[in-house]
Length: 140
Image (cartoon, rainbow, N blue to C red; front, side, top):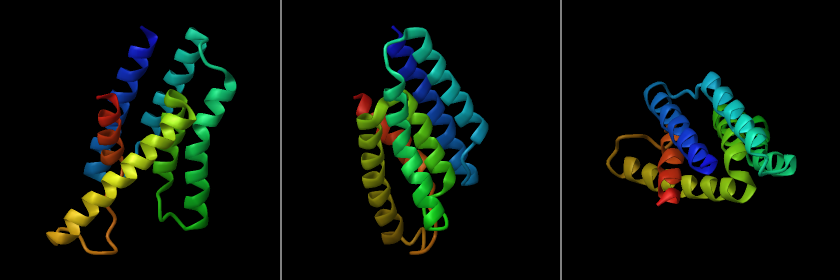
């Protein structure tokens, strides 16, 4: 039952973050904090996963944050923070798969936008909608 609650909380969190990112090109840090705290509380309540599980899950986002720092935000800090939060829900491997699938979807989306001249080569596109879409695909 708690697994279902976790999936729904993450789905709603990603949907809200995706919508905000789509509209404002920003990631809502308060929403990420709320989602992350909810994930930790659910893990504490269920006592199914170890602290190691939580830490390794967050590592995907931490690596993205470090990459963002080194590359002067070629990937936004908000995206790194998002993957810290998703890692608390999913653990390392599922979070890594989520990142990879979202990256593939974003690449396809960027190619389509370039092809139809909706975006230019150096313009940014919101990434979180692709993360949400990737998570929905992983749930199927």
